[in-house]
Amino acid sequence: MTRYTIITLLLVLAAFVVQQFVPAFTGWHHSRLLVVQLVFLCAAVTVNQPTMLLLAFVCGFLWDAQFTLGPLGGDAEIYSQPVEAMRFGYSILLFGGMGFLMQGIQPLFRQGKWYFSALLSGIAVFLYLAAEYGFITVVRGSPALSAATVRQMTWTATLTMLLSPPVFWMLSTIAGRCGHTIFPEAAARKRRRSFQ
Image (cartoon, rainbow, N blue to C red):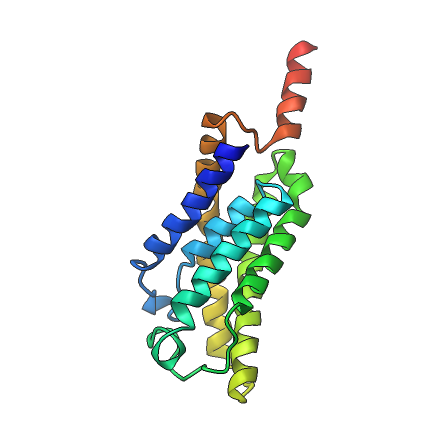
């Protein structure tokens, strides 16, 4: 379990590097593939609660360090208006909320029904984006939700969700090599069938 935890932490850190090279998809309403959120959500359902909270803290801390510090509150391509009133650390709460959402479906995941988690990852990304947008609009004082923004959030959540099966496969492979099972109930059921 310890090796698997360390590897998932390293995988989250690698996701931050990969995120820097993922462009926006202009043909799909300027949606983005959120690699960090994707890796976090897939890992959150495979680990216990304290490890998930550690991953949420690391992801939220690094996400805020990357996008809320610096001129204009972060990367000008992502945040076109100043957000200096945003408090550092709000992303930790958002990642924690997504993690608890994934932990809630963990009993199904442990039975080997990973596809429910894949679907929930898309819903969690959409809720994350909606909450983040809500925070930013309240801070800016202009709470207006346009159809283009909803389309962008929907496409971003859909693209991220569609790439969750390969991430689950990768985590399953890593867990197998670490001697850790992420589907304990499915493995126990398979053992019972082999003895019958």
